[in-house]
Length: 329
Figure 1: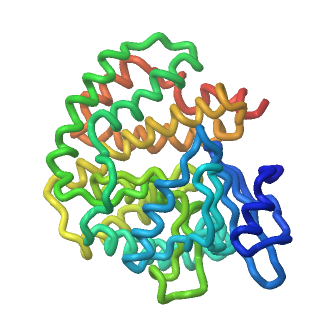
Figure 2 (figure 1 turned 135 degrees about the vertical axis):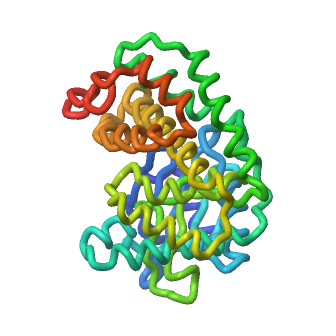
């Protein structure tokens, strides 16, 4: 977490010359974050180094969100060629830690997060690429590309694609009109902020991969969280809360299950890749949770072809704890 060599000059150009640059966080990508401190002023330096990262999508979505009254970080400075952004600092109060420290707040905080999504989904989508069949398939394919080889399985990859092709049309039919899908809307990317007039008192982060797609996807991100356990009873209560605010189709629950299975399969592949390719074994500790969530989704009748593929190709012994020894290494 050493700041890029160009950071001091960039900060000086933004009016933050001489400010302290303190490590803040890395994430599962190549992006890194630093807190910038100048007296009483605080900001965040995002280092999104090219060619691995491009900060332009973050800027575009942030400006669209703030333009519609949501609390995305204000852009205080930018050097897009070097992949540097200076953005508003929302502090350290993430939803994840807040509800763990104050369990009595969990229901109220999640209701606010659902209300935010409901407001977002009443708007036409931001100008974004579509979350379409090709993207769904590419993401779901991370299981056969990374997880299956890691646990020593030679699987029917063509049959896997065919199984998803059999279920995804329901989502596609149900996704009109598309909404802005933030894609990583979960408790570690939602901040509790002081200004309750802005976006329900919740600040949004990590939306640079947003696409135009089905409204159920971000509900899945929030309620089937990869990094914390959400009680199934809370999940169902929040889905009912959402449906009381947004009109949904008769196929909405099936689409939610399909997108849950797709997202959870994707994350199993991503977390395996983070270990194998990027040397980050800590993500393997989340896999038992991901398998439990995936199996719950696969139980929905709409996912019968995909469930049949998993049952035939990834037996129980190659799922939940198959990489536990690597996570402990």
